[in-house]
Length: 400
Ligand SMILES: [Zn+2]
Image (cartoon, rainbow, N blue to C red; front, side, top):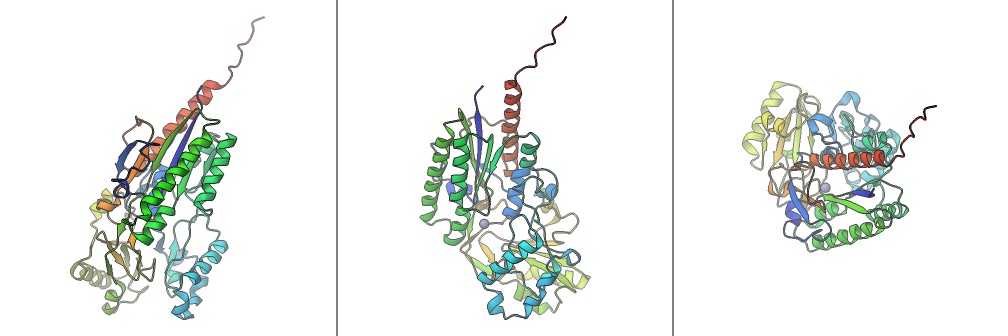
């Protein structure tokens, strides 16, 4: 029986609009399609891909929530007494992030970003485990739980290592022929796009580099595998930011007390609010509706249709989303503006993701990023079927 390697390569932020007029992967994976993304950031898109379920099912959505009772950050509160010229610096934040991650035993991606130390004891961080590991979802299983259960040896990239180190590690494992499944996660394009925007000539140059890397992995696989089923895909796109909004300083004159009257997480493209009394709810809602034309309050029905986990208010009671291209500056994610961002409405032009494959026929309809899990499960099931067929039959009992 033919030995097949299913190779799944996730290129973070390689959106449909980024590659639409680019020959990306034309030779390697000529069948391409546009995919709907998931409302949220990579913290929600990647778990949706890995589990095949939506945020209202797996509850991996936005990183920070207002939850003072369960906040693990109480010991960091004293940092509010240091001057902001120190505590708002990225290098200082990175250092505190590293120390906190180690002490709290968080296994996934963790960053304190620009969360104010004055209020840090009010927040909890929702991704304490890594969705790239078995048992890593907030709720339910992911593809790695399936692979472990079926005892299929696999490769998954290490988010702590560089793109090149992950590429070389996979190439080594392919050359040894020890794995039956591979999931590569490259984040370099995402970082580049945030920095230079989606029209920079550096973007196609990076795409050419990825093509070379994928080709080298295909070559490494050729020794032990008869076929590589290649799937290259993204989690979302990237929009250039042309306008900034300072929501925090618009809320300030309302004379409401943060933590007493309301709480908010200012993500880069949305603000999420919790209210502790009716006047606070009314004042903030009126402000957002009447005086911030750069975004809108998302109605409950729309959030539900996007499969956002809002039923219990855990991730916020009110979600204010900015229009594509508008950025919150400052926000709890950053003090200063960046060139491009994602996390807008999934219907916004730059939000769509992409899929490229060398498989002419996909086993099921694949229209949104959680459906990539179906492709992975199809490959895993094929593997298991092949293994069962290859097993030597137990000889029938001889009759005396
Ligand atoms: Zn990003």
